[in-house]
Image (cartoon, rainbow, N blue to C red; front, side, top):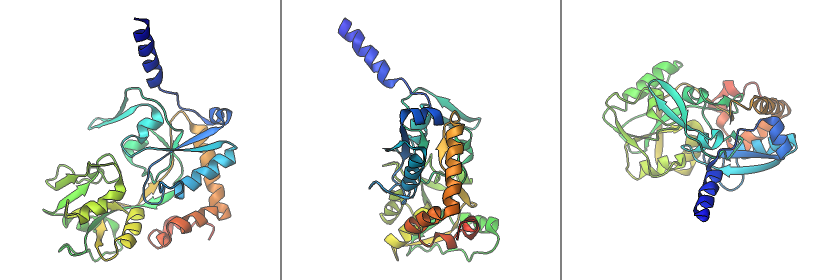
Length: 293
């Protein structure tokens, strides 16, 4: 009986969530836990990446040890808050209790309204936009493009038509984010993994006729799969990527913002951009106009 009771108590101890830590607690602990997701050169999976170097520098700036904790797009908010995010037509709620595995998210993480309802976001770390992509031989042709983004988005969406569209719910490629759900489209949810890097291979494997992709990933995939895919046009307005923190950690978020401004002022931010995303500036000249260059 005692052994059984002890086992139950140990189990409860293991699943008791750790409270979110703010700046003072992290300095006292001597460690900053970075929740990262293997995705599009933000977190490569080889110990480096744009966001990895960004947060490594932040940890050094704070004078604490850096630890990378791998997660995925479906689990990362739970790993940060110790609560599960549930979205419904009535809004966003947090349920359950889970272990807190990290102190901040930085992984090419898009600022979306439903995420903003439960997280504290930093100032923008990177620009993005969601695009419609097809195989090179697809009869769907790229839109001519214009200076009116809203018109271009409308024209791109119209080209989906009866074509099947590969999407990944709960991420920046969720069709609900862009008015593509519940309008009669043939949506194919990719569920074999939570890795957005697999969208183009799935497209090339014939799992759908079209897919959604964001610009940072598209830049890399257009090189990796040169001559095999093409961009049809934009599905979204310009978006912003940022680091995310628990709402109970405003001092940590503010410290990161101050560090990010310092990087942008002294040129270290530009060096990271050029290292991991050469050529990105021509897609978003307005975003990078304020850099040290």
